[in-house]
Amino acid sequence: MRNRCLLGAGVALAIAFSGAGAQAQFLGPYPPGAFYLGPEGGWTKLTNETPSIAVRGPAGAIVTPSVTRNVSFNSGFNAGARLGYAWGPWRFEEEYSYRYNSVASGSFANATGTAHSNALMTNVIYDFTLGWPITPHIGAGIGAVNVYRSVGGNATVTTPSGATVTFTSPAFSGSQWSFGYQAIAGIRYLINPALALDIDYRWFGTPSQTIRGAHVTTPTGCCLFTSFKSSYNSNNIVASLTMMFGAPPPAAPPPAPPAPPPPPTHQVYLVFFDWDKYNITPEAMQILEAAAAHWKAGAAVQIQVTGYTDLTGSPGYNQRLSERRANAVATVLERLGIPRNEMVVAGRGMNDPRVPTPLGVREPQNRRVEIVFP
Image (cartoon, rainbow, N blue to C red; front, side, top):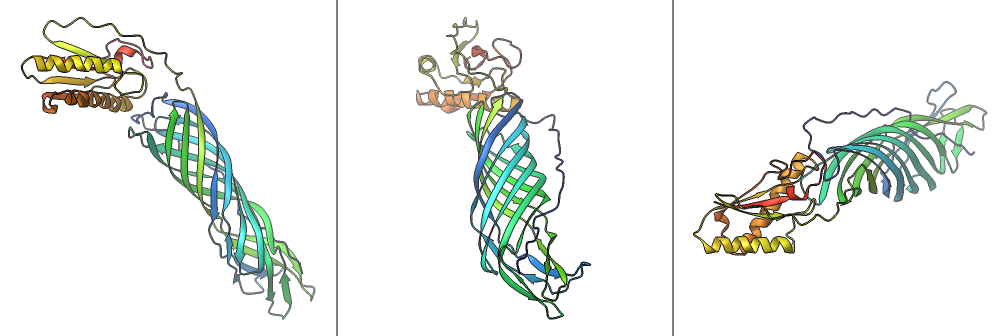
């Protein structure tokens, strides 16, 4: 006879930890706090399952020994969306995701079926701000998952009284809410300050639960029902495009900075940079060539090469950016004939702005490297 059982997993609410450390470094070139949203999608693969199936009497007592049925699944897809808030290196987000897989094979005869889930997750993600174009991150999430399965084929069990119960496809089908959890690891590429691409691996799962299935009437008239025990675990590759709100607009081209008056006791050459850049422009190359000619024309002296940033972004990010600017200048000066051991190279980040401004102001004259001759 045909039997249809309810299959899935139980219900839970997600509570994510909150709050970031007061000393946390802020992410990238956009403000320390920014809302974001975006779509996601990718590949998913359910792990093979070995559900435990039993037939029980009206009072719940097992009337046949439990049997194990193997079920494997084809690769499938996932799709969803995320809405969150980035605070420094921390991201706190709400995520909806849908996953779908079809049955590949099983120890039922003519095994068929599908499994899909709808998940509402609360995730916490930490980005490692290493100063690289690609930023690694890790995270975790918990939430509520509604799992639906329709798994079938042909199977027969015999009760102790000798009654035979036959299940035909689909042998088990149904859905139920359950607690869900996931581990996240991936990389992020900032396309621009307001748009990021994430590629993640996510392990997603639910606890194992025993589900009561549909009633079955045997040839002797005894009313029985099935129980089905399994969990829902999957491996996922997810790509997402994240749009951030609150990022600064693109900066206007900076005006040419005026040449500073020479100090009375030493000579200073200034090299200026575009916002969030450390590449040497053609104008900067002319200044470096003049500085190298100055060094070659006199006695060998040790010069100071010090990088600075404006007052946008985080102190940690700007410190690394100022060091990259100083090293970029020192590399060119060395190529122009000044030995590296004749240079003291350092970065000062947001310290000692040439033009004092409030935080968040993009002042072109503060994005500089100073080459100081004694």
